[in-house]
Length: 244
Figure 1 (tube, one colour):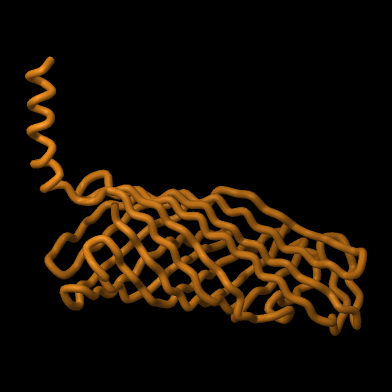
Figure 2 (cartoon, helix red, strand yellow):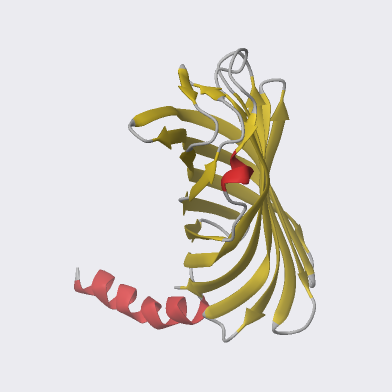
């Protein structure tokens, strides 16, 4: 028993010297604008209107990633990305939404909520000195809601569902401390599509801390008898990552 303990203690310095951080935590925030946010509910009988008309932004958004590097090439990553856009306007025509009629000429409030929870697995397929490329899969849980309120009248349509996505990432080293990075989840199908892609510059403050600035787009929607909704959102993002 003493022999085993002594051997373990002797290995600790060697292991500590060679091991790299396995975990990382990344936080991102910034303003978001909507250039499109069209909605018709029910999809086959409601009134088509634009949530963008209630306010295009900017709105404040943020997200948090937590990841684990399983091997030199394999990673798992969790994401929590809440999003809630609220606006108000006077309707210029009647709107039929989710079985309720909202009258023209009356101030109406809107809510667009699109929270995202994701688990990603990715594998590095290119491992060069200046270029790294990963591909993988993302399991996404979408927690969405669209609501209108006019006085005491409120109608909302919520949706909680699972969405499988393809994942990709590419990182190009520009200098010893700076790189260009693209990271995204996306998939298109007859039922609809979803894209969440960020392009950013990453600056290594030191081997543990990394800052980034970039642009993110979030686009997608669905077209069926229950809902017709398509949105296109634009983010200016700043983030910070710690490896440990």
